[in-house]
Image (tube, rainbow over all chains, first blue to last red; front, side):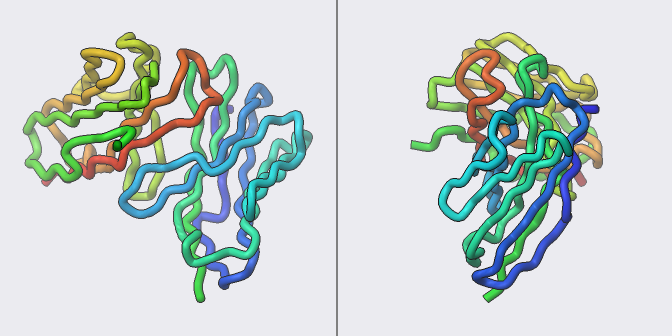
Length: 113
Length: 115
C-alpha cells in the first residue's frame, strides 16, 4: 500500500514536444505529491508539488495533473527542452507517514534536438 | 554556500572494509536523512534523524550505523562492506520535525563501489 508506481521507465521526446510521466498510488492517506528532478551527478531537487484539494498545478512549463478518484497524478512538461533531460521522480507523503516520502521508480527523460 | 554537502564524492573499497560517509547541512534544518540509490535509480530511505534523534530506521542491515553529533551533521558508518552495498548514497535535509510536505534538500551523493 505504500508503493508509488511510475511509468514510463524511460522517455524520449523531441524538442518542443510534451513530456508526460504518470504515477499511481494505493494509499488513500497520501496527501502530498511532489515531483523531483535529478540531473546526472547531482541529488534530486524539488520541481513542483501538489495537494489533493486541487486537480492541477502549473509552474512555468511544468504542470501536475491530479485525479483523486483514480489515485493517479502526472507531470506534463510543455515545450520540452534538451536542458530538461534528467531523471524525474514522483513521490507521495502523508501526515501519519512517519516524516518520509515514498518515491516512484523514476523516469529517465531525454529531449532530443 | 553549498546547502547539503557530502564527503567523499567517490569511495572505492574492498569487501570486508569499514568506511564512513559524512554529511553537513547549513540550512538550519532539523531533520536529516540517508537515502540509497541503486543502479536502477531507485531511491530508498534508510534513516532519518530529527534534532539528533533517530526517527526512521528502515529495514537496513545493522552493518549500517548512522550518527548525528548535532542537528547539522549526519554521518553514515558501514561495517564489513559487501558487494551489494555498491550504490550512490544521498544525504538530505528538510526543515521542521514532522514536515513531510516541506522540500527535501539533497546533497550530490557519494558513489560507493565495493570490489
